[in-house]
Length: 82
Image (cartoon, rainbow, N blue to C red; front, side):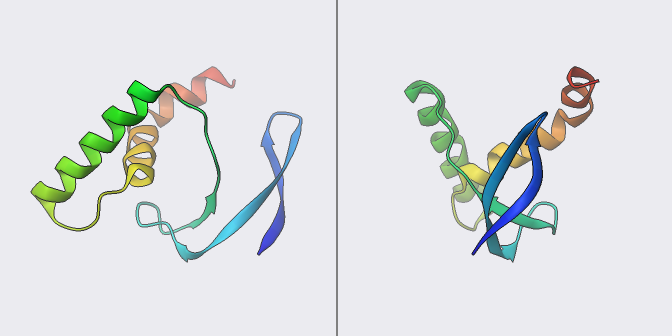
């Protein structure tokens, strides 16, 4: 289901697909999106997510890993938009 959200980035409107299930990390509704990153970055993220799944159980999730990294650096990132 597509739903119009407020502003995705300063001054930019975004249409996002609202996830049916809550985000595992925050408990808030998630979105489905695409990002463009270098292949070696993607390879590293996949490797780390698979290793975490092996060590901690569950499914490998690059999305969860990215969300955790953002949450870990939230204050720093928020400072950049002030």
